[in-house]
Image (cartoon, rainbow, N blue to C red; front, side, top):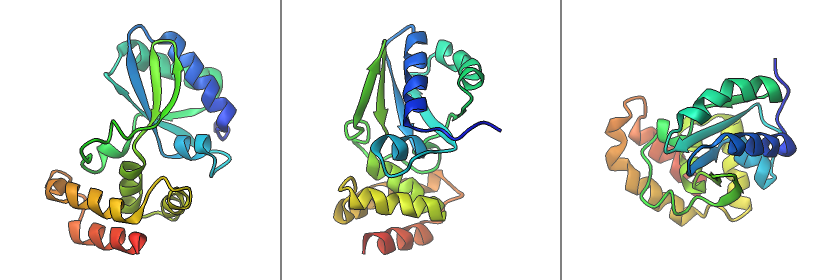
Length: 172
C-alpha cells in the first residue's frame, strides 16, 4: 500500500510529470488533490486527474511515477460521472506551470456537483469546505445543476430526482 499524499508530494509529482510533457497541455486535478493543495485536507489517498489533450508520453510515464514517488494516480475526474457545465474550463483555477504542462483545479462547481452526486460523507465534507472558502456559492451551484440536468440521460447511473434533491439540500 502506498503512503498518503500530502501537498509536497503532489508538487513533486507535478514537477516530474511536467518534465515529461513533450507538448503543451493541461492537467486538470480533482478530488483529494484539490482538497490538499487548497488546504482543507492534509492528505489524500490518490491524485485524480485528466489530461487535455491526452498525451501518450504522460500516460506512459504514470506507472513509473507512481512507483518512483510511491503514490496512487487515477485517471478520473467529474466529467466521467456527470455532464460538464458550460465554462467549466474557464472556471478551473490555475495551480502551476511545469514545463509545457499547465496544472489547474477542475472547476469547483463541477467538482462539487460530482461529489454531491456520489454522496459519500467525505465528498459532502469537501463540498462544505468549498462553500466555507467561498469557492462554491449556493445560487450558482443550483444554476450549474439546472444547466446539466437535461444532459443527465447520458449518465444512466445517475437518478436526476435524487441528484436534484441532494443539490438542493446542500445549497439550502
